[in-house]
Amino acid sequence: MIQLKPMTQLAYEHFCEISKKDYAQSKSKAERLSVHEGEKIAEDAWEKLLSDGLSTPLHHFYSAWENDQNIGMIWFKEERDWETPYAYLYQILIWDEYQGRGLGKSLMKHFEDEVKKLNLKRIRLHVFAFNERAIKMYEDFEFEKTNIVMIKELE
Ligand SMILES: CC(C)(COP(=O)(O)OP(=O)(O)OC[C@H]1O[C@@H](n2cnc3c(N)ncnc32)[C@H](O)[C@@H]1OP(=O)(O)O)[C@@H](O)C(=O)NCCC(=O)NCCS
Image 1: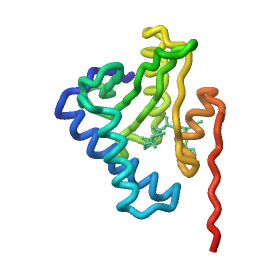
Image 2: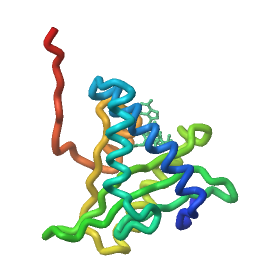
Image 3: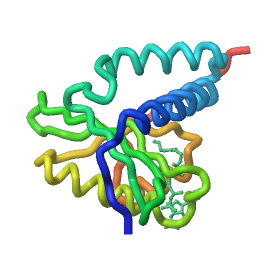
């Protein structure tokens, strides 16, 4: 049984470090950019999105706990300037040593409950095409693909 708790400042700093690095690596891998380009994009994105860090309005950060173990994190934003208000899921993460035990799915269920409590009617997210595990999890939760971005190298 897992529990969500608001993220502490210390946990936020750790989460940002890991998450930014992961995003930079994933972006470079998926879009065939240099490591440097991936890092630059990640740095700019964090600066733009989270100008007030943990206190940035409308952004929600939770640590996930199983008993007394921190097993993962979640970050999402409320988007209300639309006819159908929604939650944008920026990151869901189960620390490596706890993956593959059903905790990701359990965290998704808790996240959906939080979104419903906020009276948001939809969830949107982006996932890199190579991330088969996450895609499988989202499909199990009945997410549908809305955009597909493609790439081809010319010589
Ligand atoms: C994505 C993530 C949250 C899933 O958490 P998890 O605890 O490992 O997932 P679960 O154990 O709940 O398993 C989820 C499903 O993925 C499946 N799965 C596991 N490994 C897989 C793989 N290599 N390929 C495809 N599916 C896989 C599982 O079988 C399970 O489905 P099932 O219950 O029908 O068997 C976790 O892997 C993670 O933190 N990854 C790094 C961060 C990340 O990529 N986040 C998503 C950003 S969009």
